Image 1 (tube, rainbow, N blue to C red):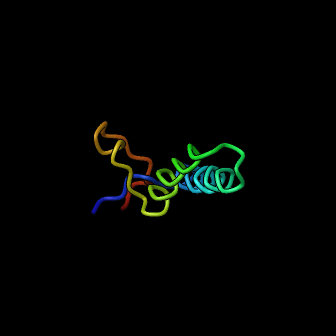
Image 2 (image 1 turned 60 degrees about the vertical axis):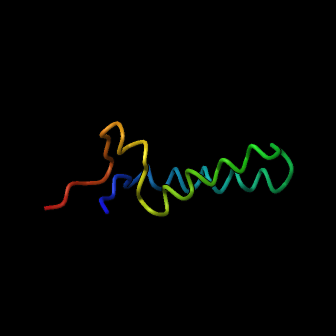
Length: 63
């Protein structure tokens, strides 16, 4: 499996996912906050299906 999420992109996805889920659990933004699962999972696994479709890659090149 080829990774396509790296660096700052990965960190931001994890942070945004955790914040959205946390806000949802606190009842601030309602059930829509559970959409935070998507960036959280893509950040943790370093794979984004949308990036694969559009041919984008934020991982550093391997030598």
